[in-house]
Each structure stands twice: as structure tokens, then as C-alpha cells.
Image 1 (cartoon, rainbow, N blue to C red):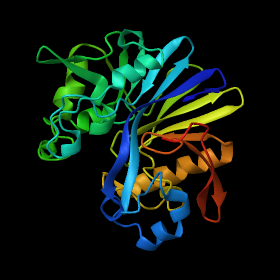
Image 2: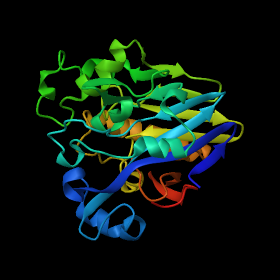
Image 3: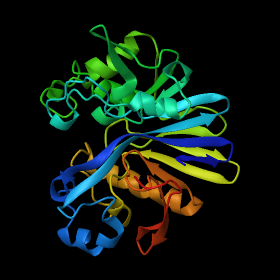
Length: 297
């Protein structure tokens, strides 16, 4: 089952797609090759292919908390023009069917959390209806970090043209803002007694994480804090998509430290295999303590 209970919160993993995405050396340009070899048994086959391609998942964490239905990150989406990432261009995926299989219709969703506004975290914010982009979840409030909303707006950042986030603001962010469904937040935002958003800048200016504290359970919905388990033992190495690497490293160490101290389950946006993990302190770094309780992709 792709569903677990953490305190009073039910957590379900809803996959959009998974598989190889980029060569390790391109995705993590400063991570030494011998690190991939040293940790091969940890990484292959779920997180690294024999061909050196990093494997990731696009997935949504579906939470049921305090009577509300909450989606954390919404993947790549269908019908989107993505010239910088051809494999994501004009997709036709059955994500909404998978959401329905988890018992959720679009109109049932109360909150959408975009941990940041990269292309692969906001795609299902909208869908194409009669040639127009409309909110996929018509009754939801979309929680977006104010810093990212400002940064990824082409009016404020002309450099977006030609980059990985080209068209993303216009097709996946602006339509829900125009519909009056966006709540912009900064520093932190309390959702309910169990869930709180906290700023985690570095990967993008507004990157955030969702902290769960319920009963004795703790969890960290980590967004893009890490893309591979190798960043647990090598937290000072960033992906090529980190906007502010020094800040990203400090944030990664701080939050992995919290997870190790509290025994929190870490649920990144893109971890393939079991989808989640627990970490522990090891020397001056961290290590994977155990994989999460979800079945492997």
C-alpha cells in the first residue's frame, strides 16, 4: 500500500512518473565520481542505473489532516509546452486517474502546497480546458512561497526565457493567481496543529519544506532538499538546478540534522524506490538509517 499513518495524518504517495532523468555528472557536477562508486549498493537500481543515469520520481504527497485533503507538489502536468525538457513536453499522463484511485477527485482538494515553483512541482496546478489553462483543483487554496512567486515571474526575471522554467509561470502559476486561489506566504505558515510550512531557501529563493508533528511522529516533506540518497552522506553537494548553492548546502545540513535528531521520516519530492527514508548522524555528516515504509517503484 502507498498509504501510511503518521500520528493523526494519513499520507499517500501518488506517482506521476519515474525513471532515468540525467547523467550523474551533469545532474551533480561537483559530486566526485568515486562517491557514486562507493555507494553503488545503496543507489542501484532504484536511484542510479548501470548506465550512470540518475533515476527520480515525480510524485505528490497526498495528506488527509484535520478534515482536509492536501496535495504537496503537483508534478509536471499534461499538455504543457516545455522546450527545455523535451521528455516533459506535451505529456499525456493518467495522474488524475491515479489521484482518483487514492479516493480524491479534483474538487475534493482543499489545499495545494507548492514547495517551490520549479517546472516539476506545479504542473498539475492547472489543466487545459477549451484552450485555456484553468485551476485543476477548483475548490483549493494554493499555498505558494512569495519569494518564488516574485522570482519566477518573467516580468521580474527576463532570464527565464530559454531556461527550464520557461512558460511555467504563465501556464501553471498565473492562472490560479488570477482565479483568486493563491495564498502567498513568507518565513512560515501554519496549516493546522500538525502541519507547518517553513522557509528552506537555496534550491530556489522561496524553497520550503512542510514539517509534520503529530503525536510521537515527525516527518519532513522535503521538496528538493535532496534529489538522490547520495546527498545524505554528501550534503555539501548540490544539484545543477540549485539557484544559491551555498545557501542550499546550509539548509540541507540544518534540516537533515533536525530529521536525524527527531527520527523524522524524510519524504523528498523526487525520491524513487521506497520514496522516503530516515537518516542518522554519522561522523560530520549523515547516513541513510532505513528506507521508508512504501513499496518500491
